[in-house]
Image (tube, rainbow, N blue to C red; front, side):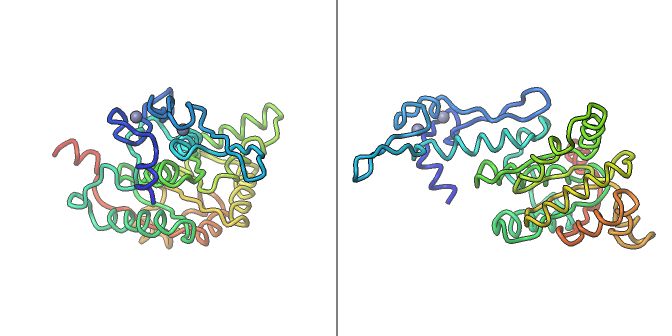
Length: 276
Ligand SMILES: [Zn+2]
Ligand SMILES: [Zn+2]
């Protein structure tokens, strides 16, 4: 499906027939439409075409050549993907099966074959393990592929940053809904570094509302956390119990229902890549 959409879209050698290129802009990755889309011959670059139905009424519809790529680029840019990951456009970007350990392979297969390919029928996932094992990379790859390839509305949010936004909203007297509504509305939300920092009872309550609203709307949530590793889980009980200590019982048990819990183990893959 994606291939045929790409063939239909304007595309040129400059953009490798994608219709866009991805750069960084400040803290975020930004997809920029290629000239071949901006100057699309089919719609004159407006992205829309006017059609008349059999009664002679004019109707505006999306351009068959560039409409899809325009929408997907908008969705990618709305997802707030960190600049560091601007080159990651697919779940398995930069990951070669030969250099992966079993835990990463298992997580990758779930993200790609189960979650993305069967979207939206599968549970989200929570990636657990020490830092540097590729958790955020995998989560970003998933939403990059869903936005750019499938037109799904996604959002990336760093947990610690979310807490500071909530604190700021509280001190300025702005409604917390201003912060959480866009996160409720995203079809797929990534919460990165879940449990980082100290969170107050009030903040956890708001987070609980966010997670519950997403749960009730059957929207998928992905998360990463450094606080649960296989070693700690062996020592201290199961993953949900350890999460409880960071984010409270309600959020932890809700996530357990909404997410496949996947451990990543092994050595820092970035360090390994540098050595190789
Ligand atoms: Zn182009
Ligand atoms: Zn067009």
